[in-house]
Length: 246
Image (cartoon, rainbow, N blue to C red; front, side, top):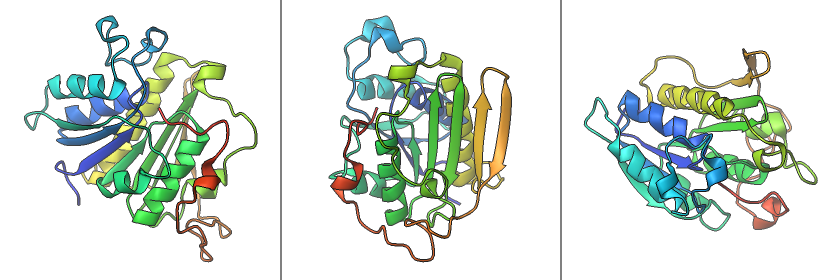
């Protein structure tokens, strides 16, 4: 069991990262590393609940850290280390190496696959949390994958995929996605004694329906299948119009 002293890396300090941080601090998690290179924007305040108008234009990761460290905690408060850059092929392995659990709160497929690959290569458990329009999806993968993110989604989609910038997002859906991700992270830390892996969580804001769908390792998966071939981070694998992390 990792416990409350484990370090949680949150990649993306926005609409999903905020409720993740809130829930984990309230549960007593002490150590965080947050990675984000964006700045606080007025158009995002409806879902990025840790920020206020007075912080517009400030680096998001720094504002996130201040807000998290101010929160009451049953263990006496949290410590947040700021990494004011996005996760990229040249730094992602070093970031993952510093964490006991990774929470992927990014807003695009390229970053999600990059983090999934890095976590599997380094043997670190990861929780992927996404939201677009009225739909949230969350999935956790063990250090050995089986199943991993590539078992379900296989690879980066061709062309531009839907994201919150192009398709919009309802703020509470981000909150649901972040809350589920935080609960799965607490399972991985051993704070909640329930299995964390082997399921895809979905929430439909149009019907308020929450579902868990069992998922299995895909035999042809290059990341965690029996004939695993993806063992390094190749920058060309994540190139394209969707390659950014927030």
